[in-house]
Image (cartoon, rainbow, N blue to C red; front, side, top):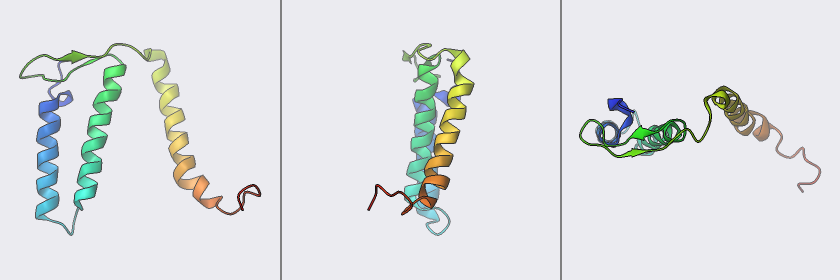
Length: 104
């Protein structure tokens, strides 16, 4: 809970930096990608909150939220399920378009 990179100050600094980089070099990185990256960072912190807790204001204060709502024994199986789901959504399902007899 005392990782400087897992607090809202670090997330805010990252978001400002990546948005600034996107605005200054539009051809290399669109602003929408910068927002997606910022959202991924925030979602990562929320996942850490449900798997042990996060001090969201560290190192400038304390706002601890979360607990072991997901037991550590489930972390690897859930990661596998998430990776397989993403693979199905982005690789298999698009290739199946038009092949389902129920969808016409």
